[in-house]
Length: 138
Image (tube, rainbow, N blue to C red; front, side):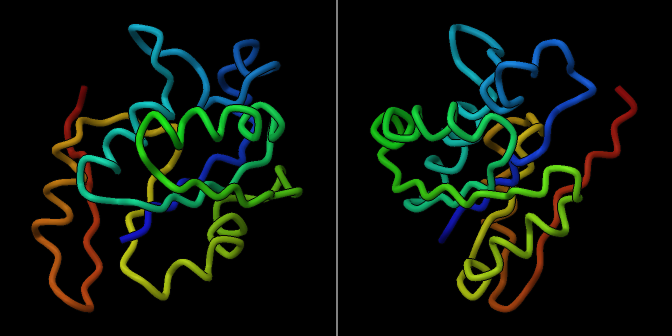
């Protein structure tokens, strides 16, 4: 199973925090970043290879890729997206070669507990598409 993370956007709604960092490298707690949480969740369900579509502050993710790969024992490939003004559909297209296999798609600015990925994987049946939707009002 492959993890695909969409992380190309500028994160303009989080400005000024995202001027110098991509939103996925913003700290959340205990020195961990959003990307730490996402990669830990993916590793927890058995993902071994992750493709991250990156754009804004690409060099920051490039320089930290090896540390993340070692920390979570993952193979991590970065897919550059030069069209930051375009939407997630373009990032999905760039990662399209990974959709021939079983994959888990994660938006780089969506935080959730690891139980979400586990529930998705456990409910999956061959050839099916499984989507997590949060109906809470909080």
